[in-house]
Image (tube, rainbow, N blue to C red; front, side):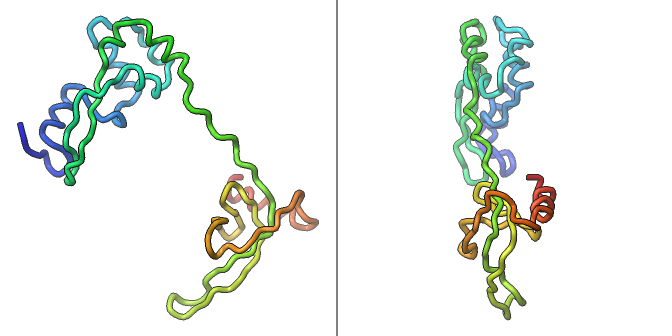
Length: 183
């Protein structure tokens, strides 16, 4: 069955999809649960499998079965299927339910600031950079202003003077920036 199906994948890869094998990124929770439950000797209930995260299900129920050529560049893609031994043994359930995905990073601190940056003024062929200033809310590596956002590591971003509290008379502008960018 050699050959290619269009420009996307080999005929063997198409056949693998028909046999419930696919790249790991193509497995969703519903398909993984249904396929596991259809496996002979499955010891899990639908509720037990649905109580686990998709990442845990992929980690403990799937194994790489084969690889196939995909794309017009003949990439080698691993295809995963249900690891029957783990579906017929109750031991993986405790591991799956205790599996915790990687911790999310702590929320990025926001700071009020006055920023100085260069902005191109004029036409594409006839213009120049002019130094401008604006009030901004800095979150992570981005400075949000009323006119948009600027990356703080950009070569045209000069400096930021951070405030502990909004200077008198600037509270409204900072509130408008926060509202505009949902900060």
